[in-house]
Length: 212
Image (cartoon, rainbow, N blue to C red; front, side, top):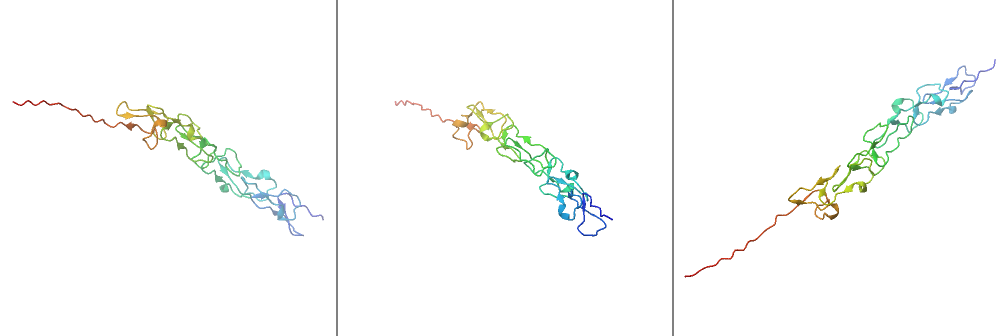
């Protein structure tokens, strides 16, 4: 009687075996008539399988969006990891989550998309989890900035504290606002009004004395 070849998904490493062994979970065996467990191929990074005797890579399940798996041969969806802060992935079955590009950020784990840097701030590098506010003396009502140079310096008659969406008008009296370029008083030029020191005046009175 002829021996039957072990079907894909199984193998036998012992001559005279009466049964084929199932390939382990976390991968698959595509070869028919395999005589060694060495034919086992692990599920690729970004995928997993808890099924024994799998005969094709099509049976490996992709990790969900917002997750990644850097290793091969995973046997459970629990091994899929949430995308770290500063990254996001809308694609299932990824081995790594792409970093958010300059001008965007992501403050949460497991995200499927990066967030646009909000007004009054900028995001200068890839992989940020928080935006940086526009410096004092500058402002911006635009989104998606990637450099502090894109924040607008205040001009004469204005000032702006850190993270300002719009400049403030200088108080009508008692203060001066020379603009960021000409402010040599504040540690952060243009960040706040400069108080005008009160002047001191002296009055001289001439007195005439009459002697009798």
